[in-house]
Image (cartoon, rainbow, N blue to C red; front, side, top):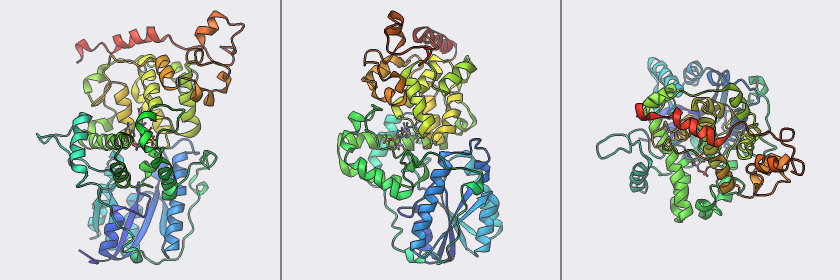
Length: 477
Ligand SMILES: Cc1cc2nc3c(=O)[nH]c(=O)nc-3n(C[C@H](O)[C@H](O)[C@H](O)COP(=O)(O)OP(=O)(O)OC[C@H]3O[C@@H](n4cnc5c(N)ncnc54)[C@H](O)[C@@H]3O)c2cc1C
């Protein structure tokens, strides 16, 4: 079908790019004139307590980039602040559009919102077209031989790998009909302050926005991708892509990333593709097992676990005061930058649940507040993996030893020292459990524990035993 609609509106959400964008491509294919819009959604923004939110700034900056690009093409984007359930149908009406084009969003709130918009459009006699865009394979596209959704990653991945070369990664050429973008006068962009938000430290962190920002990271990563498998677990090493925030807001196309990984053909590239597939895996878990949206464990029998939930321990964890350098440095990375290395996410999550004996949902909520790349499905998946309540999770009796994790993945203590300079005089033997050498010779130890850095708030061995009892699932599993 070509050009069968006069005017259409594309509503950008978590797909903030003009290339390889399914909804934009189809709107351009089918319409004489295409308008673009983005809504800063008060239903989401009003729930953000901290008005210096890195995500809001990242979105705002990426919209600014998108707008600048559209302006060079003689077009623009309508950016509004309010409730999209009212604003979108109104915009469709006011612009006299025949149809709305969107890319699907799989989270609970978004599904309800889109359903409400859909029913309003129906009553206005307007069409709605929805596309898969943020994942390679969605919902029920990858099923077991019995037609059920997968709950274990490896067979899911194997099935994806069989299909991926044929489907799922085609590029949507949005350039072809770009001249159909509506020619409109430039509009002033609402500021962060007008929405009650403030600038954060994103610029000093040198985080780059929009598709240009994603492309820079990708160019840099292309040269490192072959080493990904060997280097991805070491937080002091530049081993990962750092693209998660771009994946979250769609400033890069997931199909573009998958094509790149497939074309590269190395162990590193395959390991990276594996992670992209984990991302899809958790999206399909969310779509097929919606009980996880309601705060429930994937394996619901684990909802019987009685966590101790000590509020002081939780504060110490959040504020990087546990006395375990690897945990505290990781939490400082999160608090100061909004990012945390994947290995460390696993270590701090395990520590919260299996050392501090705190409900994984508390940690999940804290990450949701702080992570710049926060995505419900990956975050919930990661937490439930660490807490052993998830679909393809760490067995409940496997408990990370934070000291061994530290020795293995930050052996020289480089990462720790970056975030806890007070420990910079310690050597590679001392830094992972500084209380051990301190207790032997407090006078001559380089750091005054209890003053310059806390004593450990727990004893790992004792807490491990308690965790095993807490998870004593003989009666549960
Ligand atoms: C407790 C916990 C919470 C997490 N919360 C989130 C979250 O809110 N948002 C988020 O995007 N990721 C989350 N992850 C997954 C992972 O830690 C991040 O995606 C990764 O650290 C981002 O860094 P990167 O872009 O350099 O990743 P790379 O290693 O370069 O991987 C490439 C891309 O694959 C995806 N990816 C990588 N690992 C995973 C994974 N385990 N699960 C799902 N997708 C993955 C990301 O989109 C990432 O950008 C979480 C993991 C854990 C253990």
